[in-house]
Length: 485
Image (cartoon, rainbow, N blue to C red):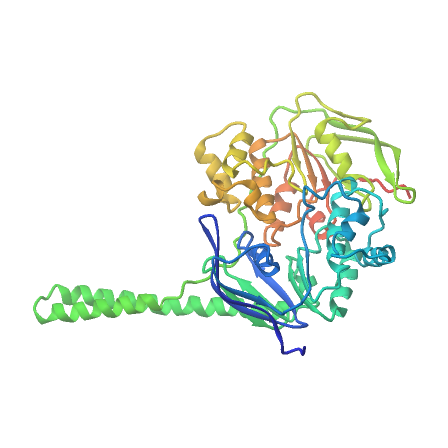
């Protein structure tokens, strides 16, 4: 094959999820060896396109073709529920149709690419969220496939991890399609963009690096807007003339009728302006009323020694009161997520949460949400007080419309689940807010607004985040580093 060979082609592909249209007669092609970014708003259907390419979903109409005998690997965002009991080694072995006898060095090499050291015998369910994300990415990379599909691969990667992955992709000689909200990461290797418009359900194909394409899309939007302004003025002028002639009667009514036909033609020429990804509205997470004094006291924490992979106890002296924010730091696998889980459940040793304190918990895997429950019921159950109108207004601020409210949590994209989780916190009015990697899966346009809300939160807060630029926007009063060194 040469660089000019098309190895993925969508021909008039349409796909519906239930009653919701995702794709409408979509056409695009991907050539061998190209590095492509798949762009689109949260919930537009980017992950669905990956499923269609991989053959896990079938189109309602149209055809999808891939090169014969080509191998394909997908880096998913979450570990499947039926995979959590697998060991790391078993999870990598599962990636191959035949037994690989020298798999140990291959595993070590690919884990180095994602900047992770973890025992091969460890169960996936015992890994931290960050470790699971890296193992998911590594499982796709180890297959050395002809086509590599990466869905939000930088989630849970620190700066060094992103650098490792970026170098890998730059050196990767085969075809790669990436979904990500990390603009700098995308621009480092992207040669073209597939833009999925959530409103037209079409794919637009662009050549060039990520930043160049984003500017090209903005310029096209502006041209469409200006065209609509000109057409709008012309239509209004003709309507005024039509009204004048229609009142005259006789032959003038025929003139008015012809003008009406012309106006209808002009209205058909108006471009349906593609709205860029909307940002969520500014919001607040109200603090539980009538709380004071010590909200949380931590005297010791259980952590994992990353050299021996055994648990140890570390003495600490942390007291959180109202309006105090704690940043919990430490490398992946040291026990940050486990500590947050135990704090939320009230099972952490060496901790005391004041009686009557409501805890709001944002889990990075969204397992705090009931995937079989509708979004509406999830928010209604979370709302401590308020009206139906207030619930819907809160939801709308997070881009959750009437259609999404009727949708089950499990059918949402990861980004939409994140927005539902924040809407839920806003309705819960917690006294203690626990946040585990709250920027994962979130559209970059939303992140400054979320940071502003957390910065202004007036209860006690514990935050885990691997994104320094996000943390810098939030008031931090104390830092607890779990690293033994």
